[in-house]
Image (tube, rainbow, N blue to C red; front, side, top):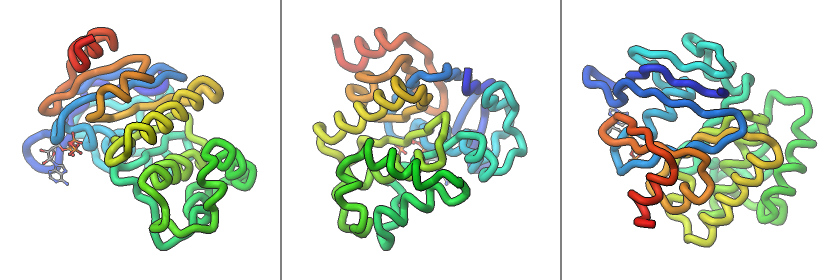
Length: 226
Ligand code: ATP
């Protein structure tokens, strides 16, 4: 298992947002957490990424307890978060945004070529400013920037938000490619059940800060009626 959550509880004040979360992400697989607005999906990713301290429970990455590990060390260990709303710096070019993602790596030039190979539209627009990009291109850039750190586990917060179905399908197929070719593990949080389930190896539903584990077959039936 690349990631194990054991009895995780976290929140912003007195009342917990996440309640007793147990979740496992096997190495090289895509696990999706589906749930409505406000279920706690973003809070879950922020807690795993070290931006929010859990009140109780453990987060194990490659079997190591992440308690007390600083955010920059989490990135070095191979954990990358792509936040909701894309987090692209709009006043910088595509290339400058990518460079930021690989700042501490010596091999970042080679990684950048790989990212450009993967996201062809970014290669064409490498000198464009962030604000000149379409929604789909911005999402690609956000993922590309995370990939510059050569993560082994990618935490993705609603990558389909605001994108046309065709562009979402493109993003999902890229994630599948990264899993199949590079063994990347992905924890994908989505409201868009159809696109997430199209690539997920396992799916769990989140509601009011709790997870209900089911097989992705059951989830398809529940969410898509098929
Ligand atoms: P969304 O799709 O809107 O991001 P979500 O499932 O990701 O929904 P969260 O953003 O994790 O849900 O929010 C879960 C709960 O935590 C909500 O009730 C929200 O009001 C609360 N919450 C989120 N961020 C904060 C914060 N910074 N301070 C206090 N409460 C917060």
